[in-house]
Image (cartoon, one colour):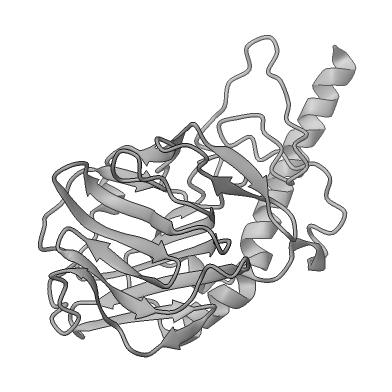
Length: 287
C-alpha cells in the first residue's frame, strides 16, 4: 500500500508537470485567448478550455488518429455528445468554431457541433458535408463548396464577425473564397446579427442535433472561441494541431499521462487507464 501511495503521488506530480509544460510550451498562448470550449476527444468528452463545459457521451466509439491519440466516431443513429447550458457559451457579436474531420468516400458527414435548444432553435454551429462545410444556425447554413470525403483528415473553421459583416471559412488553415448560402434562408451578405439574433439558451450537441442524424465520419479537436480569429491565428492553429505529437520532445516516448482532470484516464493515447481504489476524490481547484 505504501508503494502504491508513493507511485500514485509520483504520477500525480508528473502529470501536473506535463500538463503545465504542454499548456505553456506546446500551444501558443494566443490560441487560448477567448477559448470557451475545447474538446480534444481523446477518449472522453472533457472540455480542456478551463471553462468546465464537459460533455456526456452516449453510444460513441473512440477511434485512433493516424498520428496518435483518439477521435470521435458516432456509429449509431442516436450517438452523440451533449453539453449542459453554460453562461460561457453565451456568445454574441464574434465567434470562431474549428474542428478536424475525416470522411470516407461513402460518408456524408453532418452536424459537427451546434449550440441551442433541441427542436426549437440553434444559436450557432459547424456543419460538414461530403462536398461543403460552413456555419449553421436555425435559418440555415452558409459556407463553401469543397470536397471533404477523400479519406483524409481536414481542419475546418468558420469565423464570424458581426461588426465587420464578415463570414470566412477556412480549410486546412487557408481561407476559401466563394462563401454562399448552402441551406435554408441564410444570407451570407447580411451577417450583422447572425450570432445573437436567436438569444441565449440551450446546451451544446456534438455529432447530432436530431433523431437518426448522427455524423458519418470521424471528428476531433473541436474549439469554440468568443472572438473572431485572424487569418494568421487560424494558420497558427492549423500548424499547431497538424503537427504529430511525436515531434514534440514533451510527448515523444510518452506512454502514460494522467491529468487527473475528474477521472483516472490515461491521456497519452495508449489507453493505460487507472481504476480508483479506496475512495479518492478529485480537486477541481488545482489548475
